[in-house]
Image (cartoon, rainbow, N blue to C red; front, side):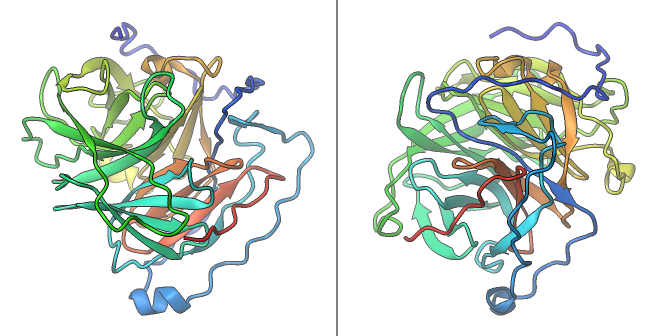
Length: 365
């Protein structure tokens, strides 16, 4: 892993990628979308259960809008408008800071609450109804901010859940922690006993950072995008978010891979006060999706085998996403085409589907 040498190089974010991504045999799938208007915070849990979600229309294909297993061939042109899938219990999960789609259990999603003292990950169906919580042995998260589902290691078919205890608002932590455990079979519900987890502790090569974004490569290697604020424009600004990557899933020092500049959002609201900050993310081969305080941005690589080390240099475009009061979670679908998002404090689960794609259906469990 090498550090990018083009720090500060301007990038043309007006470029809209028109590429046909190759299909991999075990491909997983893709992306997010938005809609205008602010989302009202959810009422207490009793209201969240009875509140009817927005109707879920069947997306109809639009001329020229096609998708691939890696997402839209021409983002954002082939994304449909966001639809609300449902509402989970916002009292049980008040600070939804991470989302991930299950590979092993189609139709189920993991939701991570932002600690402190996080000991479990929650599981919801595609209609946002609660399945339960998977207790993780040895996990006592200090500031759990993001999660991912990815292969358990290089060349492994088994999928693992990765939990990033990476938050550090005061920038004082000696290290950050990533937990990893194999996806459990959730057919009959969550396990009765805590699942065993592996732990990797990382330090930054320069100084502590606040971070809310964990990406994991197809080889099971963690990457961190920091929350350092920065205005973007033609290129990375002073204090822009930074990308750090591990060599492997093992204790060690992260590599500084340079700045991550994102396009200035179409609608500047929160970023007008503190700059553009990255609050969540997810990745699939050749694709990276980042949530910011005002937008969602997709980076499209030259091919599915492209290294995550260089994703900040890939063409990036803003994709539609539901505007939410405190957007801190986003994830690609594992089955189907599109991505989901949620906010702290509301319990509302939103889907941005690709045009013409089947919508996820609620699984049992």
